[in-house]
Amino acid sequence: MDIKFSSRGSTLIIKMSGELDQHYADIARKKMDNEIFKSTTKNVIFDIRGLSFMDSSGIGIIAGRYKNISSLKGKTAIVSSNPQINKILEMSGIFKIIPLVSTVEEAVKELQA
Image (cartoon, rainbow, N blue to C red; front, side):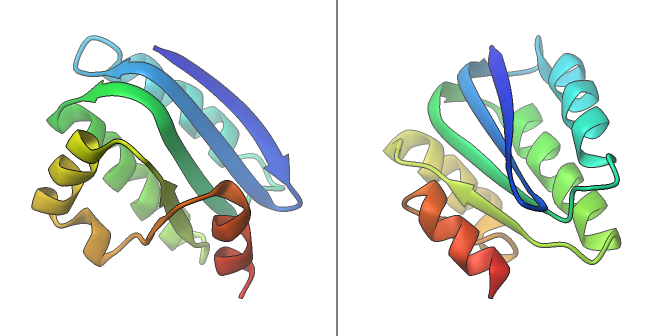
């Protein structure tokens, strides 16, 4: 599991690769929260195109960070191209609250609208 952070203005981009499962959930959560609660962060984009696997703990991480950002009046988006991961996220209902977009650029535009 690898997590990289970058920013576009007040939008934090969290790029994940590898496997997001119960073994890395606590580490991932702590790293993300450290970045999210910086004063400059308003919106978050989860770029999960590099993930090869995600289980329910990954869904929990995304949902929890969504809740944190929402409490700060921010917005969240998911960038994903993996059909299996998209199916898991679709079945969880997460796309009802967080939009799925094709590219980071598209997500940045959507969150700034």
